[in-house]
Amino acid sequence: MAQISTVSVPCLVIQLNNTIQFNEDQVIGKVLQVPCRNDFQDDPDYWFVPVKDSGILTTFSPIPAVGDFVNPPTFDSIKVFRVRDKLSSYTWWVYGTNADFVASCATCCGDSAVAMPGADGTLVLRFQPCDTLCIQNGNGDYYSVMGLPTLAAGQHYFPFGSYNNVALAPGGGTGYATVTDLLVFLNTNWTPFVWTAPGTDDLTLVATGGSLNDQLCVTIIALTPSA
Image (cartoon, rainbow, N blue to C red):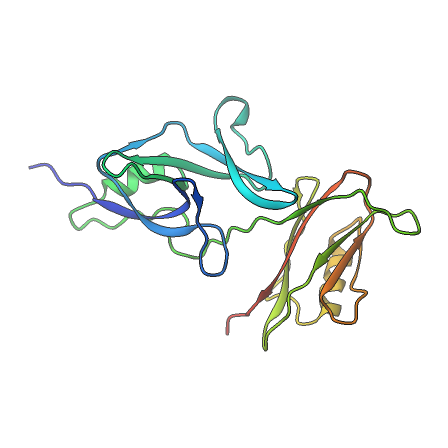
């Protein structure tokens, strides 16, 4: 008698039908059960390219990961595949590859599960809002203004960013307990900008530098370091 493959597997779903999935911390992607039977799986895989309207992520543009697009079109493009259920008419855009899904669905009958990428809940996908530099200060330097979060007790600042479609250096360790510490990291690592927090409320961050039409994408989150 033939073995029966898995009915469904937990997957990191980036988009369900036409809705981007967020978890409770507003991180992209939610772990959902995706059916292995009665479905269509697209071949090839896709790149999900973030589309940002006035700097804010609004949707993803799927591009087949073949031909001229074997490599990611942007540094923050993510590899996904599409599963369409014939019974419910649901469509899942899943993080990983079609080959990953086939391997996970094929396990059965007491065999060790083949986990899908990102399904263990440790992967964090964040997409930074972007600013196209066009405003100059009194000295003729271009600048960008962004907000800082209010830290709760025990929280630290943690930066994510990119400059002209190149990821900026990731923050270190558990982040930065004060604005002063954050500025030391930014001014050391996130060149060619000079970073300041000129307000008295520690809620405003200013990056000065760059050239006309450069694109600076930044998010500073409030992170609670693990014990």
